[in-house]
Length: 93
Image 1 (spheres, rainbow, N blue to C red):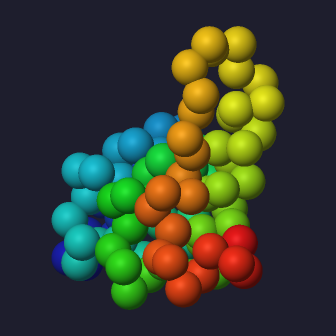
Image 2 (image 1 turned 135 degrees about the vertical axis):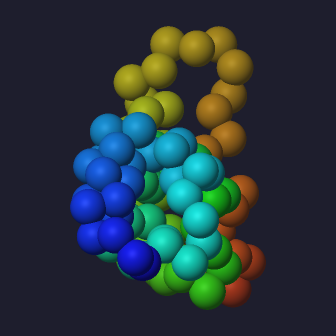
């Protein structure tokens, strides 16, 4: 990454709005940035490159969407981040 302040801005934004990860170029995505994003919005897992989807990161995403579902009053079932967890990790999340 050429500009550290740009990374810090991405990180700060991801902590508040995880979906912003969608607009971050893959070569800027780090485990730290991706964890911040999925901790804010578990569905941001869909924007995490496959090579960065660790068990820890996937668990954080699933935990966030589970908590969001528990708080939700929506009539529709919230599918959550599990749909973006690689098959081979699902039993460990």
